[in-house]
Image: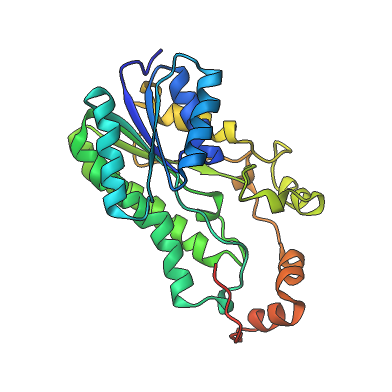
Length: 282
């Protein structure tokens, strides 16, 4: 029970990765607050976690991780559980599918930055004043943040920005005794990635994974637990890949899938650098 007596908050707590991270923290004794937009999904996750870890302490706080007042209120709730805050896990982010660069507009590009970078900044900004030396922050990045991925330009840029934020924050927060790191998942099974698990598409990903399989939520939850716990006490400013070895290779070419969704003519025009009148939001 290495985390007994410690309090944690997880943004996006009802998601596959957030709930797995919660499970791993609870198993080692932490009290966990789940934050997410849907109260019903949070309660379902809480019920499921307590069925597996009956002695765990899990509380819920509905709120939007992209709204600063909601973030501040959730962090204060987490602090109130034990009169302390030790761990922040920021999982909110994600994209909205594969869209060519020339089919994006400024709002679409900006939205990715808001969800993936600004949401994390706000959580860190409000959590750190309540943390004592020894506090740990874990962010969820993506393999796409390191390996360029065609038709994911906004997401790739946002996750790259997130990892630079982690490095910058680690430099400044070290003097406060607070660590910040990121997990960089490869393709992981979640409700948002379900469409990529169609056999033909999944095979393209797995071909780039030396370990021969895509990820499951517990692969990422275990990595979060490591970075949140004492085992990683001399690590900060790092992005920790949990990806089956994909970084040794490359991202797959999903042109066939994109053409199927958007039309071959639209894809061809975008690849020639021609803007498309029917803008798609990523």
